Image 1: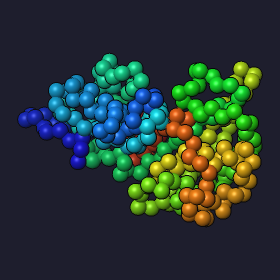
Image 2: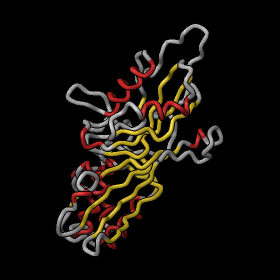
Image 3: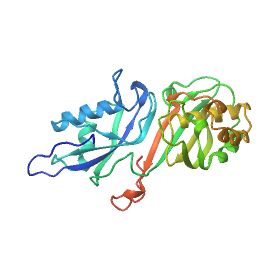
Image 4: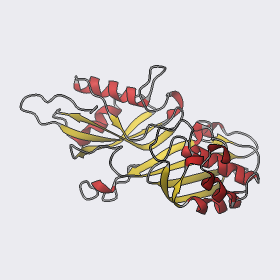
Length: 276
């Protein structure tokens, strides 16, 4: 398993969890790849330099190029004497300013962030106004045409519960099953400077397929335009056909807000373990 390091004699290896926040604008996603810098490659390089041995993290969510996070999760093993909770401070002094560790702490040695049941929350931000705002350019999708947020909200309940989301995932998905459970989904708005709105689509579920949240967002945008009626969501889900749903919204509007691992409840200070 990647993330394992060889024990030095007389030392016991520990597994450390990192809650990682990052601006994904300048990265080719999370996962290490040959064609550019990624969040994972920066973490591997920084950890290896810090501890003087090769370390490879195991990430929880392999976010795409341009996607952001407030609380993605990674683990690694080390036999270093440094207390787990101090590693965040050591890393943050070495990482680039667009990546920051929010917490670091020890977890059970068999904890795996992708194989352990968890609850994920994502948010998709839409800047809905006449002109762009420079301060929002990196983490929201600018959309000039006025959206009917009431209609978007009316479409949300159709996605709640367990469904086959094949219509709402990329045709390139490698998932064995396209069935997922959505616990909450809402579209809310807030005024910006008295002109225009920031619309936030927030969704929580037990897992998400490749591009699923961005396709949900793209579909809800079309509902807001009147292209689809809220009740059309039922037909889209039943079709199990990517062509039945709306377009994939741009990556830069998407942020992984956090992840909750019920299995860790009671083993750390935060009983709910929401890593944000």
